Image 1 (cartoon, rainbow, N blue to C red):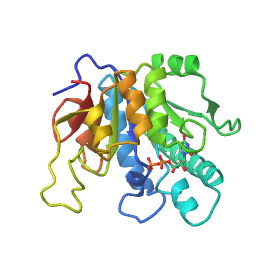
Image 2 (tube, rainbow, N blue to C red):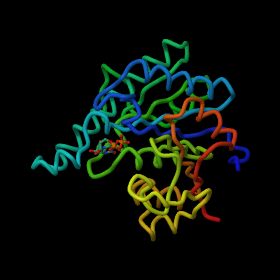
Image 3 (cartoon, rainbow, N blue to C red):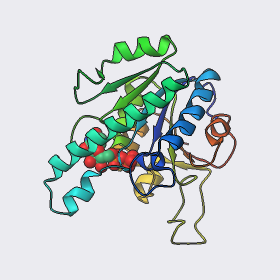
Length: 239
Ligand code: UDP
């Protein structure tokens, strides 16, 4: 079922999808393919705010698990998201799509700071705005960053493109009988601790009534299908 009347979306891509078939880092050919799909969506008339994770390069939790200071490791994770944002900006601009990167950690030589009114203007002019560095604070993730930007930019929905095609009642990689939900409420996601996004991101979407559409970005052409309300996906919302 498509999200009716949606015009402006927040598209969140996990960092790991930028790896393509690699084990780590950025595969420029795959980023270019992804950029092509994002361009197609923009050409179809969607206003797009983009948030990209950093898990292909560095995750704070992983650093902390190996003995690093958690906050310090999280700042490294945020810097990883800036690298991914720049890679996506470059790929989009090679396809002729105007973009701006706004980072929650100020980096004047590299990109703009997050300024909501300026981001609004960019969208009006047909630019894609890539929000980097999550919420700009440790102990958060880019999912929370995505939920926050979706709320403040008044996006109609948050599309989370990841490596699984929706929300399951148990881990589909471990349980062959796992069932995918077509639609599930925020409260069920939180109560059953379903792995969609971290709880703070889900709660922020719930409180601001922003539907979350979880889908696989690994399949070619899937973004267009999902935006049209087709293909495998799970919608998280209130009813
Ligand atoms: N991060 C953070 N605050 C934020 C956003 C990100 O501290 O607001 C750090 C955190 O360490 C996280 C890393 O950046 O693990 C990379 O982001 P994330 O894990 O969300 O990336 P994804 O899983 O989407 O690739």
